[in-house]
Length: 315
Image (tube, rainbow, N blue to C red; front, side):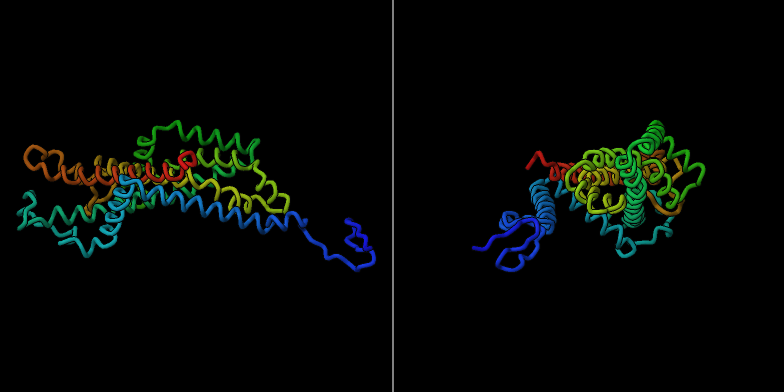
């Protein structure tokens, strides 16, 4: 009868037993390092698939998404859709109400204004994510003095009234689209940094993070490959709500004259220019105001739908 010693892997009277990283029970259940990674990826894929299915069932969110898609197309193809260039104005019929015969001036400026609004909303959020996510991730993961220092810095930034701080930055930098990106990005990253820090604090003690750390993964790999991908839900939701906030901030800046430089059209600038004529030429400010309201409502409905779709309590 052949005997075996588990420690050495030698079968007495029968040769050598090939070494294995997993026990027969683990192999029969499909466990082991590779199967764990596969199951984790499968669970992540199922999460996003289920979230997309729930999002499709939300009619308000899908309606908002359709409006956002149309606005993006209008912004991209503004040069083709606009009847006139925004720099060409018929001063003889400047305040004429839109009609079938002459809808061109106001319509052209609103089309180009959509481009400005979408650029500001998306571009500013890119800067916000690039600043806020690394700060929040490092603060939550490192802990100790680094966490205290970064948290106090975030608290100081959070104490400033945001709109007032944006106006101060714009006054220092001057009006212009690029400066609006910088002003909103420098002041809008605080919220997403705090959310990222909270998620990292909750995830850094999990077993899969300890396992990756035991295998020799560094801080950068742990954050980029293991922690942040599992913390995407609040980041995605924060971005969807941050876009309309950035659009409204740009509209407010352009309304008071420190936003977009003329003659580049902006919805906020158009409202600011037309509000003094609201009793006689109401359409000059009402139509751009409606465009701002519809855009913000669309992003709000879509953001609510994304938040509900990604909420694990609603599974």
